[in-house]
Every structure is written in structure tokens, then in C-alpha cells.
Image 1 (cartoon, rainbow, N blue to C red):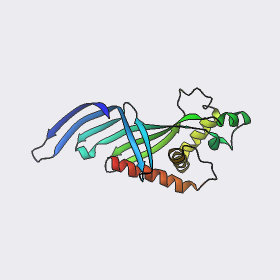
Image 2 (image 1 turned 135 degrees about the horizontal axis):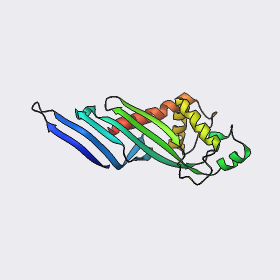
Image 3 (image 1 turned 180 degrees about the horizontal axis):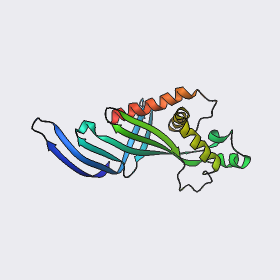
Length: 183
């Protein structure tokens, strides 16, 4: 990654390294790999950062990364959409899978989100898609299930395709495993 830093680095008399300051990421990439079978690249958002408060192993992360998927929203909204919305949902659109990393090295907090880019020229910002994504944010298991579908299959998963908790656990496990290897 490329970024800028305002850091003070000091080697203490006891041999321990001390770093104070913040490293702000200008650009970067994070590759999530699962069992050497699936690799997904996430672009780290400009402004993401790592804050150092002395011990480098106690650094605090505030990193957001995006993986773009081009897919339909049909499986996401098929049970809730009008005829016109179902028609639009059949066309491929840009969908962003957002990976958020916060906390520290010992206990990273990994979370996901799914968004439709604001620069999308399609009508994919329809109210049914917007409402469904808002409902997903209220149910972490369902959100993680959809993240899993987008990352592994490049598509949303319909409600009856599988059990929610198994896919949600797999998605979160993938992220935690991959993030811990990165760190």
C-alpha cells in the first residue's frame, strides 16, 4: 500500500520499539484468499489508517476495503419486488462488498456491508434494493450470508438456498482467517 505517515519511531533503552502517530493509506490492495481456491481483491479506501500509540503490536486499525462484483439483484429482491423492479433486477449491476477492519492486532473487529455505488447508471438504486440492503444490515447472519454469496459465487443467495447461519459463519470465518494471516 502507499500512504503517508506522521510517525515518531523510538528504540527504547530496554530494546523495545515505540511508534507514535498515524499511517494514512492513500491506496492499496488486500487479497482475501480461501484455501488456495478463491482469491478476491479488495481496494483499500483512501483515508483508511493505522494509529500507533507506542507498542507497534497494539496499533489500532480503521480500514475499509471494497470488492466490486457485477451481478443481478434478482435473487435479493425476487420475493418483494414489483414487475417493473423484477425486470430491472435481471440486469447486471455493480455491487460493492465492503470489508471493515477495526480494533487492534490481538482482537480485530471484522464487519461487512453491501452497497450499490452511487455512480451506478442503472436504476439499481430502486427502493426495493435499498430497502432490502437496509434490512440486511439489521440481520448480521443474513448480511454475512449474502457477502458469502457475492464473494464465492458472484451472486446473491435466495432465502431458501441454504441455512443462514452456516454461510454466515463461513463468511465471517473466511474474513477472520484471511485478516489474521495478513496481519
